[in-house]
Length: 229
Image 1 (cartoon, rainbow, N blue to C red):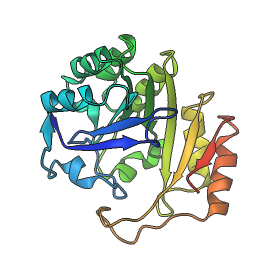
Image 2 (cartoon, rainbow, N blue to C red; image 1 turned 90 degrees about the vertical axis):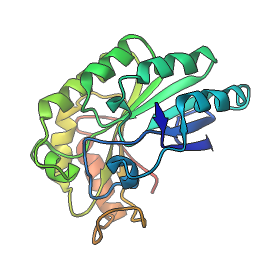
Image 3 (spheres, rainbow, N blue to C red; image 1 turned 120 degrees about the horizontal axis):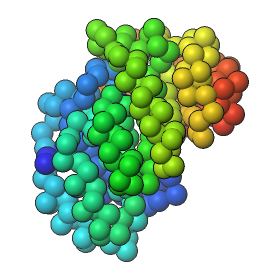
């Protein structure tokens, strides 16, 4: 199994853990605001394999306490559950970032308690989902299936939306709220432009707009919060 990136230490990616972040390549979506577009398209070359990752982690026992998997989309990899088991056997907690488009593998991971925390991206309201993901169609039923699996799993989780001025308005957060009604945590993250973002002319909404959107979402998810502003 190829590993396309490794951040050797982070205090941000895995709540309440000193962790490393493992990046896997490939993704179903082509979000125009993606910070990891080279990973999504698979153009970024692997930096190691899973055996080399395990060797690295063995040198970090007692230093790190968590391993976060992100991408790209980690659930594209059928080998992921086995790798998670091996990592957990070393005593590390594990976290998964996902776009929610592979509910069968996600459910397997949740049912087997192979992760301690899941973060799922909610891209937009149903009618805007495909455009926000940069693809022709998205089956919202699949997205809702993953939402349901996460909320019913007993695993700690969050939902999150990267908010882009060109893609989101207040009504979207009412519809997103309806999709995740009663969720434990929902975060609105402000888009930040970077050289790695594939499309130009995208903008961050104002702080006032973000707070307005969060207030709309709180009609459905009491914990809806703006993060990172």
